Length: 502
Image 1: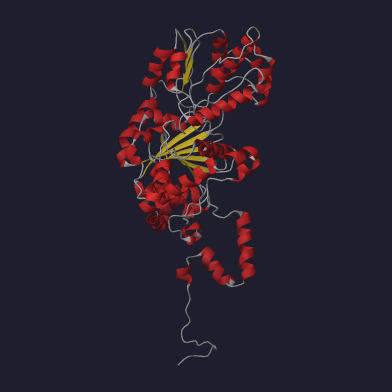
Image 2: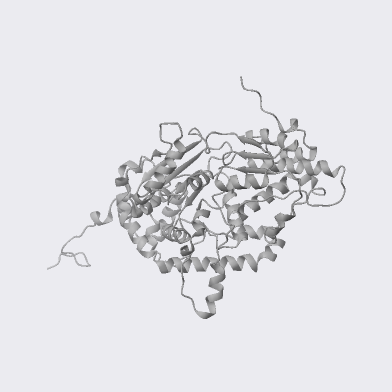
């Protein structure tokens, strides 16, 4: 019989810390928190592997704050007591927010400072000779092993889950084999017909692909944000925060694996007067990363539009959904050039289980063939020049928002909510008719699950048409119910007065 789980109040924590935990709505520690916090409070070094979304941040943040509060009882001078190092700026912002929340009732004794923009890497040489270290990750890579040798002293090793991702009862993983054009056709059908429900992250292999996919979706009136390493960190953090608050349904992103490729940055020809602005805008942030560690909240789906290049990248991408106890779905598009990568991931995740973890996604492509010409039309509009212009336009816009408006938004935080990041960029030719979905193009099988217009939009549309009074009701019925080209009627031999012609 399994032993009962410990509660936070049984861990010997300060009352101010317990109050902050209560405000966060944490009823009891997660498994990693239950195991790590007591060991950390004993002064042990820890090396812990726990899957994404398991609560690793609080597992070290809680004991760090508790030990600082304990030391304050005997030592009065102000001093740096803890240094937290994370691999990306996005994760740094997230950790800073959590540390502030946990220290809300003891802010006079515990101060949180972000030194990421000012830190000198040579300052690691200034660590004291004796210190306590925690090293936590979802994967044990060679880099993690190297850090273990460098920073940890006789650590306690915690490997709490055999699998690095949740099991099938919480995370459903699917794959579908499709080539380049079919990828765009399928993503159009899934999003426009609302076959995919809930907040969704779409991962692609390069920054150019982000904007190509965004401009493609714009053609059909599907708004999406791009998380680009070239954008200022304030903009990226704001996009993530608004996504978590429910402002956006779709974010398109790359992971850190693609950032090492300098050829991913397009060489945009610019005039002499614009060259410095363009070059400044195209500087990649080496400390960028959205697939690793960032706590996107309530993500229902992760779609690998381009398949990840490593097993670790797949784990970190898919780990953005099914976090904590929430369910999630991961769907990977796999072209013939990506089959070897797919096999590598499948073998790594299968382990000793003979069954494949990535189940085939049962979708009949023939059901959406009627939309193929529309997708081809949209793809032709998204040229390389359009992608370059969109990329440069957004970088300039976000630099302006980040720098000139920074002081204003500090004084007027509510106005920051009005700054949206999923607006149309419109460098490509937009064809208005592509935003609508004619019902005659939807197959009989999909009509039972697809509702391209919600009830309110249908009522609004009918009201507008009734007010205009231009089209006859019989012709409107043909437009929305049948193919208008097949229902067109021509009566021969009538002139304008209705008399028979000669």
